[in-house]
Length: 215
Image (cartoon, rainbow, N blue to C red; front, top):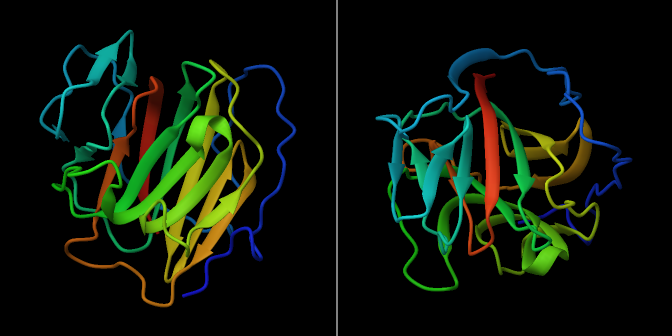
């Protein structure tokens, strides 16, 4: 397995300024997609599309807010295709950072220990007390993860994520610029690896404007 991370990762610092609306045109290999799911969270309850595996997820003023999940994912019930792009706005409520999502998971698994072994790929923005960005295949503490030490999220600063999975490649962009890439010679595909989740540990994080496209 080759992870494009601290040993060969594409990890670019972002020129981040004041909070602003970000257009929905991104650079991810120019692949056109067909929208299959959208959620702007403009309601008071999570609804039937989402399956929480622990307390800690709530909707407030049109925003999904997570805290103290301790790696218990909030699973989207919609099964996704193998080649997919997931876009959303995300921001950390505190200086701890630790914005986390999971792609290509099984849609049902929960944490059983502090060292959560995911069923998909884990993306962490500003993890480990806002010191590290990570793409990990199942184990976010594993040696094969891709890592970058910058950029780190600023508290309350809204970012736009675009995560693209195509064949054996994962590309993660923030505000239209590449953060990390990950190549997996044994990609997680098909049933059991076809769901998306918002996740987290203790820090409060916020999400909005989720759009998922089949590629």
